Length: 294
Image (cartoon, rainbow, N blue to C red; front, side, top):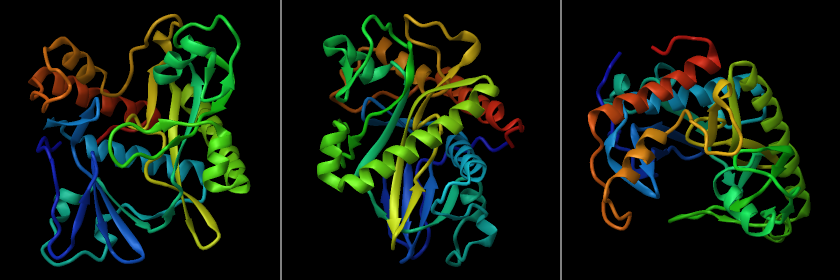
């Protein structure tokens, strides 16, 4: 196991656009997505990385893309099969790199919720609804919903995405595409969460992204990872409170225990928080896939 933390990548001769976690290289009609070990919380990228996080996320997403067999954008995750410039550090890129088709990204985050948590729980407490979807009265935090609901949001370049109603989504992308995205998102969530439950993981909610190439609608970005979803251990689930989770819970909890004001650059993480967080990501991979992370 390599414990070197990769906070950013560089490939000779290629320009890069950096997201919160991924470095994106434009290869014309293709993209190279490289998952770094950066970690974000409260809309800030932290100065500390989590060893192997990028590799875990890439391999969880690759597992799901293969298992779900949904039309998607992946060409390869094997760096030895990629036509990279001379001088590219393949050892550093291995396991964290996805070569994919470039698509016209649909400007909507397709969020599906099976349980009442996060911003959905906050909104429900105020008006009994989540993104315009009326829910039964008397639900508690982390309650399982009668059936999963589709709650889209806009994709924000900076800051928070904004939850919107389905009618607003129709205004943005048109009724036909909106209904297809809702149908596909709910179906993929159902299949993914049914499988995860058999492996001891509750997927409480998730977000999907889609893109179009010609007339094809493809599942893109990452799918059902601990960064795009809430993963809860099923054997510890108890409604009426927040749940332990498989993602950056240790990071959030530690930050909330400090005097950081969330308006200035965040502090570095202590070593024990980094170690525990890495272990959680690896545990999610191993529970889902049934394989040892290497």
